[in-house]
Length: 90
Length: 90
DNA sequence: CTTATATTTAGATGTTTGGCTAAATATGCA
DNA sequence: TGCATATTTAGCCAAACATCTAAATATAAG
Image 1 (cartoon, helix red, strand yellow):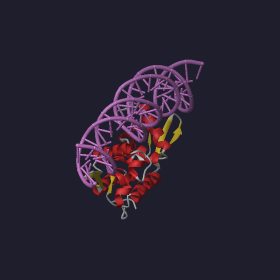
Image 2 (tube, rainbow over the protein chains, first blue to last red):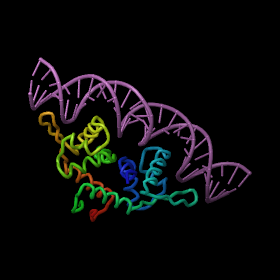
Image 3 (cartoon, each protein chain N blue to C red):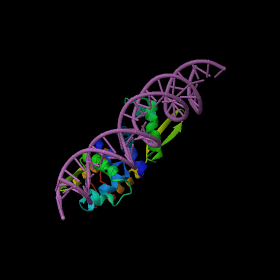
Image 4 (cartoon, chains in turn yellow, red, purple, orange):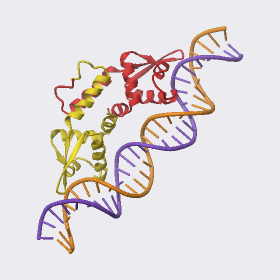
């Protein structure tokens, strides 16, 4: 679980996840939303993959990334538990 | 807000916050729950203070730390918004 | 005034992180 | 086969991080 929280601590990665929440996107599509280089983004994808927050689906030369919604939900849920916000957070 | 997420990314700091959720505690009391040295914990307190997640109340030689519940709640709430988990998380 | 206690500050060290450029890999297409 | 495209890997660097020990600070208590 720590990998997930570490992954969430970077603003670029949070934005990637937010984009993927809308729909799955290719690495190139995602890149258009950022100013950092593609290798840098590729590293962020790797961090998110290691945290099991996304997975990439390779088709030809293109990799489409998908968000693992339940992993994200469970991570937030765990935080809410940890901090005893028992009604949940609206 | 980024400071808050960075602060939450360390397990020691998450545990400190969880302890303070139960009740306010002095630096020394908190230290009993960890194996790291007091200077190390003091650094963690500073990070949490900079994120406005806690504040310390000095009385004599003792500093009692208090959790800022609403700051924590708002941070989680923002995450939930960002990821469009519109029902909230239970 | 001296000593004991609680906590922080200073300074050092090793590791991790986020960024870059250049090169490698894999695939599709003429 | 040869070229263009999409993406990652390799290698580097500077800044940030988590930790430690030793020293400083502040206060209380005899």
